Image 1 (cartoon, rainbow, N blue to C red):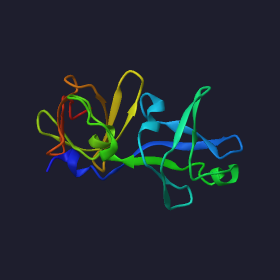
Image 2 (cartoon, rainbow, N blue to C red; image 1 turned 180 degrees about the vertical axis):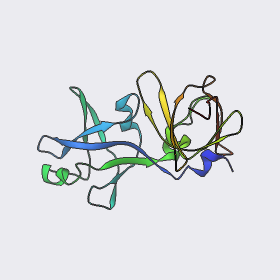
Image 3 (cartoon, one colour; image 1 turned 120 degrees about the vertical axis):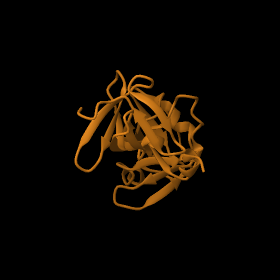
Image 4 (cartoon, one colour; image 1 turned 180 degrees about the horizontal axis):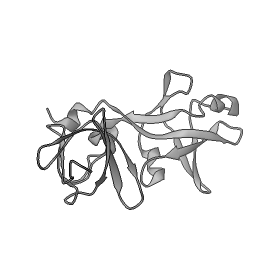
Length: 175
């Protein structure tokens, strides 16, 4: 079974609700998509609520407003109802995302991969990634040690095998 197919049901974090906008139930949204307004293309939204639990939102739509995004949620009619959603994480099933092009990866597909260097030394697993602006960085943990490895294909990352859930890096074991 392909590693990506095995993750098709996984929920992917695309953003979160960060505030209120107006009195009609609109909310401010922080988007982790690129471009950020792409978050409105993915449906349905599965909200992980701040107090626990979750709810599905069908038909969310929105727009760029100043330096941020605002969204109307069909099931939310007023400011009081919207206030209960502030802090909620917006997730969608992995299967709803478009297939990445060759040589491109979703961070969620890389998380959990075993990482070894070209000499076969096991470094642990990808815990998460973050962006520095210049490039993305893998955070690899093995329980005792944490390594930060630039996610630069063909320079530091020499192979990504999603089927085997393994990544090979050109990285010294002493770093």
